[in-house]
Image 1 (tube, helix red, strand yellow):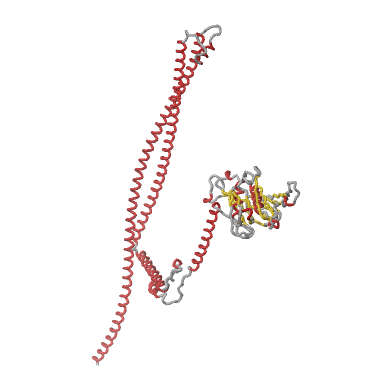
Image 2 (cartoon, one colour):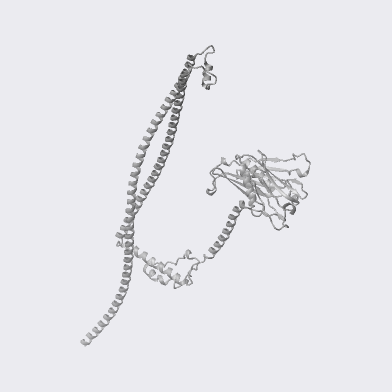
Length: 593
């Protein structure tokens, strides 16, 4: 059982002004009050009471899924009447800004706010209750939110957290929401402001009323021509028109669905056949006399509801005739099966059915193989593209290393050429006297000379040692980059050979798969031809069976009529024979006498 935590908050004014207008009404909060939601809170601010519940993170519908963050849904249920869409949007935008939605991608967080009592400051109370419910769930949040409601009276005084009685004398009502990090509400998009009073002509330049909506730092102003209207309308611009059109379409669709349901209810009437009618049993007398069972009753077809023709008796007669023909045909086929004359044909049909079923299974198996081969071809193509991309990448890297090596060669050559030219010029100037008007390089050499006298040998030795040291470093660098280049080229050549072999192998597999696919297509074509032949044979056999059944029925009925005629003729012949015998006896007696 969830542990109920209660927190009673009595807020006192922090402003040094001891006015009643700057005091907040007492707040009472109770957390975890509901069992089903993941987090819930009841908040009362004076006589205004709101209960909020949070569900989430939960599974989200496919049409609302967000890959990078969670989908936040806010539902506001008033005490009576229809939901106020603007309040829901404000709650959703405000609370969504506080939740760290990127931590719960592909999920949904539902926030449900229920109004219990409205005595002023309902929106601020709802925002505070939603924030407390989010805290109770333990969801990660960027910051906490605190909302406050204030009003401007007719005298121009600002009253903090007014009640319902004070709001009746207000000329403007404003709701602000602040976070606990930056403590700024006008810059953040969860700042909400409503103005519900007609502005004076001196302020607007003409008779007008204004609706002020500040959501995500966007203002929408709307003007009315009637200055006597005391409550301004909600002015939705391009930002909110997209939300109204789906609502209108949904309302129209609801009306149309209701009309369709009414028509469907009216169309479900179907006339039934009265029991005990003589004409209903006329078509079944022969069947009753032949098979010794009562005739079937006519069926009722619900699909014909609402579409019956005016001549209902004619339609019912057609139904009875169809049922009669169906019963007679079934009985004749049953007798043929019992006598065995139809057994070979039935066996052939069953055998053909088994063969067709086996062919269907074989075709399905081949289709599965083709699907697997298509997947394998797709995977091979993707692997080939990846290999080509890797090859292009390493080729670019090789070109970059080659360019670096060429740059190194060029830099080393320039340095060596400069050193050799400097040394040649210096040797040509050994017999000359150095002066301060010469180049800076000669000035550097002059500073390196012995202060007691010229010491060209020492300067030459130092310069040559310096140049030799740089040349050795350059040679080492050149050897290092050359080795790296050779190793990289050998590795790339090996990888290229592997890629070529893999490509050839894949090409061979591709050709084999193409050949297999051609063979499977031929098999499918042959199976289609066999299926067509089987269907043609089945139609012919059905026609033969129907003709044979009809002919046997006609022959059977003709045999019954011939038997009745012969029976009548035999009765007449017997009566004639009796009369003749009596006459003969009389004649015998006369002869005796």
